[in-house]
Image (cartoon, rainbow, N blue to C red; front, side, top):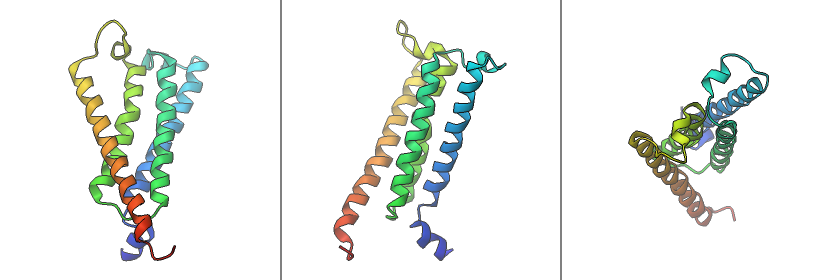
Amino acid sequence: MAHQDKQHAGNIVLIRGATMWLIMALLLAWCMVGLNFGVYPLQDIFVGKFTRLLQAHIDFLLMTALILGIYAAKVPLPWHVNWAMVIGAFTNSSLFLLMAIFPSLDSPTSPPPDLFKYYLFASILTTSYGFGKASVFIFRSTFNRADH
């Protein structure tokens, strides 16, 4: 176990999360292809704007890339920072996915339900905390390394 911790700098949850969100991005890419070919039941599932599905796909890819970049720094991070990044990456990307499935969440004329607003704000806070705190830890580590 110690070898694994050293190999992953204790950030194994990051690599696991990144791979899950990459798979999610690939699934959404196939859903977009299926929608373009009129595959049933995709048209019944994604009844919102196609651009929202595209945004979800891109956001999952972006979050994957961010998590992989932070993982690659191999700076040990507290467990709560790792989990905030992985959970925030999902919730942030899922906001677009929810709008692609439930167009009423994306209406310019009526506000979304309070539950969606709470989810949105919780996602923004979680994501910002995780990635912001990780950035601070990584930045600070550049001043502590003896290998400059």
